[in-house]
Length: 116
Image 1: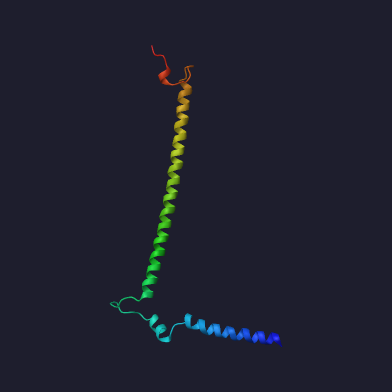
Image 2: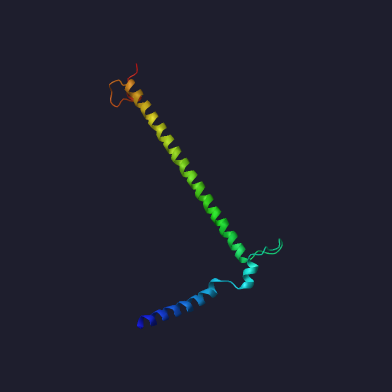
């Protein structure tokens, strides 16, 4: 018997809550019919239209910003790899030159050479 009372109380409370929520969720019929109508070209847009348009613009700006940031990061990585490769080639070339021109003096730089 007590479980049936609990069930009835739960159902009644759910009905009361849904009635209160229904007023917040659903529009009045007059507002709903006007919401989907096309407005005239010269009439000002409603706040909802302006807000929706602004949200779309902000989202597009954010996507554009993310795209350009990604492109910039990829390019920076590419440039860094290229400069690293160039530096490695240059270092190898200098090392080969030093080995070829080594004259037994330490350090083996040009300014340490004895010219006649």
